[in-house]
Amino acid sequence: MGRLTLQILTGLMGLATVGLGAMQLSFGIRSPLYASAGLPEFPILDSNLRFFGGLGLGLGLILLWVVPSIERQTVLFRAVWICALLGGVGRLVSLAAVGSPSRLLLLFTVLEVTGAPFFIYWQHRVALSHKMDREPPARPA
Image (cartoon, rainbow, N blue to C red; front, side, top):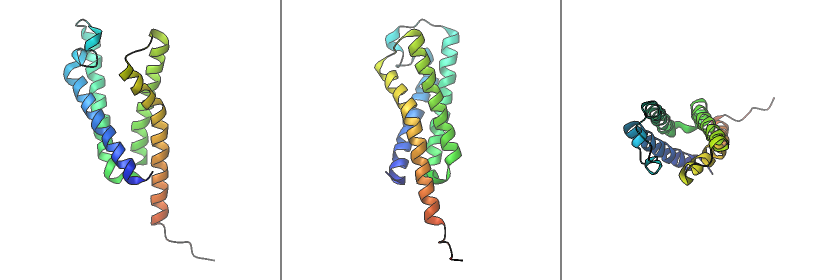
């Protein structure tokens, strides 16, 4: 799996993250993600949900920004995916503390916890391959 596939999947992840973040920022507690929970208007929760929606929107925009030069964006790429991994760890703590959320949020958890290390490793391989392609051959001594 090479650079182009990584770029496509990163772009799709960025678009999905932008979309979900914008939805959360716009609707807060009334987001379709939480409609089935029937949550009452609760300003603290709504404020936090909109805040995290803004963070998600920002992380998605960063993912989209790194796509064109993904092989040179190691630090930024890793930072975004480490944030996703830490968010997934938070979901695991929630799962243990209060129980299972919806299937969609369980899918997000799996993606965050297993996908983050995979994407970080994949980008590392792409960056390494790109560096090796650009380095001149070593001269014999």
